[in-house]
Amino acid sequence: MSSIELPLVLFTVICQAAVGIACMLALTDILSPSTINGAGFNRFRRIGMLIVVLIAAGVFFSVFHLGKPFESYKSLRHLGTSMLSLEIVALSVTGFLALIYAGLWWKSSANSSGGARRLVGIILAVCGIATLIVTSRIYMLPGRLPWDSWQTPAAFLLSALFIGSLALSLVSQGAVGCQADKDQNGCTSRLFAGLALVAVLMIVGVIAAFAQTHGLSVEQSTAVMMTLSSPWFYVRLVLGLIVPAAAALMVFSHRGVGCKMAALVVLCAVVGEMIGRAQFYHSVMGQLPS
Image 1 (cartoon, one colour):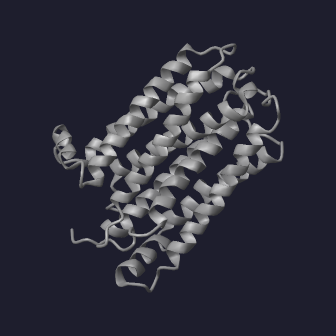
Image 2 (cartoon, one colour):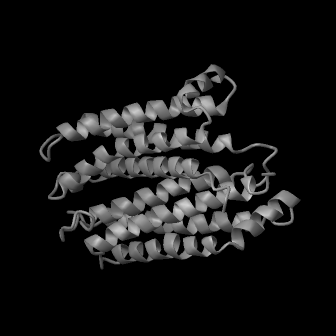
């Protein structure tokens, strides 16, 4: 795949992972504060501070897509008419909130109430979701039929849900932290494992809907064939969906996953989403004259 747009692949998937983790962490902090403040507090604390690092990394990779990175600020001139300008603003707000969130986690302790942290976490989650929607809208162009559908925002949001819920399910059951302890109420890890399984099913549904567009136009038919005939599609299917789904099923059934395997499973999910995103770009950009 020569038209994979690697900087954009890294930018979108890493930022979506950050938003997904932020949403799931905020949900944990609200629904099960005893899980947060239990023996695994430091695991959640590190995850909370990791979010801003992921967003910063995503933004860093994104500038390599620009012909003149140091002139990227000029995009703000079209704030009223350009989705790209709106994306920059939304991402800046999300990044700033993530920085505040990281600071609150840094100052938190297992005995603190965490009220301000929960509030900022909720706002961060909402802004993060809005940012993903704005980012997906950039690609919904009438002249790019394979992208101009509900499948684009669905794919972006599902990447966040999938990676975020999978990561938090493994953190909650103590695997990523390499500790054997379970979350105190026994439900948090199973909740997120269930969400990860639902996300996998929904991703498969989006792929199936994309396949159904074959025959609607020459561009859409070509995009479907380029995607489904590639060996990378099947690598993603196995590595990025089946393997993480199997791990989530193990957590859901109380069998758990070892710490090294858990880290590998999250990596598989991220790599799988990157392969899927690379195919997303290649399905259209690969049809353009070189």
